[in-house]
Image (tube, rainbow, N blue to C red):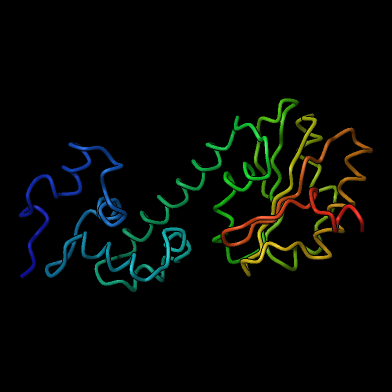
Length: 227
C-alpha cells in the first residue's frame, strides 16, 4: 500500500509545506494536489495530480482539458473537475489583470505579457489599450477562431479604444502552427487598421504575431514597409 499524504514527513505534505515554506516551494503536482484535496483508497491526491500532469505537455494544456476529460482520470469526479476548471479560469483572469499598468517599450514586452497565446490551439486576436505613456490600461479579446479572424472588422478592433478615449493600441494574435511569420492577411488587416487609426486620431504602435517561442513585429518588418 502506498503511503498516505498524512503519513509523509510534515515538510513533504503539500498543505504543510506551503504553510512552512510558501507556495513557490511547491511543485506543480503538489499545487494541483491541494486543489484535488483527497485521493482514493489506492492513490494519494499527489499521485492523481501526477497522472493528470503526465497527460499534458505543459500546465496550459491542463486548462484546455474539459470536465469530461478530467473525470476520465481515476479519482477525479465531477466536483473536483469543476474545481480544477474554476482554478484555471481564475488564473487566466488574474493573468489579464497583471498586464494592466504594464509599460510597453519594445515588441519583446508585448510578447512577454502575451506569451500565454503561444499555447492556444485557435487563432485569437487581442488588443492592448494604452495611455499616452504606453501603459496598458485594458486588454480585450476581439475574435477567436481562424474563420472568424478572417472576417474581423476594423470597427471591432477600434471599438474599445474609441469607447475609452485612449490614444494608443497594439494588436496581438497568435499562430497555432508555432510559426510567427505574418501572413498576407495579417499584413492587410494591419494596413487597414493603420488607415482607420489615423482617421480616428489613434496610434497603432504595433501588430505582434506570437509563435511557439518566438514573435514578429509587423510594423518593424521591411516586407510590410515596402508592400
